[in-house]
Amino acid sequence: MLSYRHAFHAGNHADVLKHFVQVQLHLYMNQKDAAYTYIDTHSGAGVYSLDSFQSNKTAEFETGIGPLWNCTDVPAPLKEYLDLIKGMNPSGKMRYYPGSPYVAEQMSREQDRLRLFELHPADCKILADNFRKLEAHKAEQGERSRGRRVLIEHSDGFHSMKALLPPPSRRALVLIDPPYEIKDDYKRVRDALDEALTKFPSGIFAVWYPVLQRMESRQFADRLRRLPAKEWLNVTLTTTTPTPDGTGLHSSGMFILNPPYTLEPILREVMPYLVRVLGKDAGARFTIEKGTQVTGAAAGRIVGDTPRAPVGNARRASPLSGKGSLRLPGQSMPRPDEAPAPAAKPARSGGARDAAARDGAPRNAAPRDGVPRNAAPRDGASRNAAPRDGAPRNAAPRDAAARDGAPRAPRNSPARPSAPGAPRTGRTRQGGRGG
Ligand code: SAM
Image (cartoon, rainbow, N blue to C red; front, top):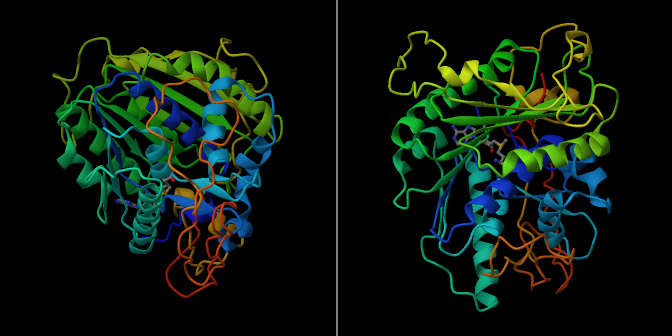
């Protein structure tokens, strides 16, 4: 079932958490000169137009990038992320939002490799188109393209990741970001990570997941804690109290296996701010939790389908912060009576990210996203530099050919509008990240 389209959700609070963490992971990887491979198992379309039909239908960006756009007091680590997006929108108007492949393209260096997998044929094509335009733009700017720096494949990311591990450079950053529209996704993530950690124990693996009432979701983080990684870090962002019927996405998490030591203090700094700006009610909060593997139990773990005993890291979880509804990090975990009200009834067994489909957006709308024409790639300068001074990273470059009849953006104007896509028949469902 391939009904999920990320265009309906681009820029929402879950994307903010995911892409902010992704930026920080790249910055850490960039601290060493040695090349690394970035693997995106579920790439999506790469770039999204916030004035498209899909975005406007759900307006989910209003739960995420929208409220952040004009903030002037953002903590420095969050500014890295915001600057990247502002660089795509040199006019200052918020029109384009990056997908994880674009974030990786901007944050990685010439020597790094991007391996992008996407199973939806339409989104895979859009992704490839977007990267072609980026390459063309770079060529116009006189940047030489590095042959096989970026590979885009229409394939199952869970399978394709396996073949790439361990990477030649022995350095990899992997993002796993499935739609969770089928329950199986939870198990597939866990199994794929189990295998990946066996092949490449030192890789950094980052998993996005929805925090929902449904059983698979509630058990998911716990299962990830039992994976044989030396360390893990789990951060969640909740923006609202769950709705009584469990629809909508109120909370999501990023679970990082082998997290960089730099990440936890950054999360402590930024998460209270995100709660303050994106929180909608008293249910807004964050959690940060980390754990270490005590026993080196990777060697001794039970593989296959047999129920496995928790390895040490599952027992050594240490909550770092309270569910931070406007509280400072470092406080203890909340009492049970502080937890958000449970949904009155469990979510239906449909997709985790497809709740918005129930919220009124058409199922047959085909998004057309495009890379901003004028989103110039960042230069080859060190990506480890301190946050830039707020100037767009990507000075407005020339636009490329209009697609789908969308009007051309004037030269040096903001990125080309991607055709919002008249609804068309097909199996497209907007998907949502909710119950
Ligand atoms: N990572 C993207 C980002 O942050 O911009 C968003 C990805 S979106 C949440 C999930 C994507 O995974 C969808 O585009 C969907 O078509 C794709 N997908 C679903 N199952 C897949 C699989 N087994 N392998 C690769 N892609 C898959």
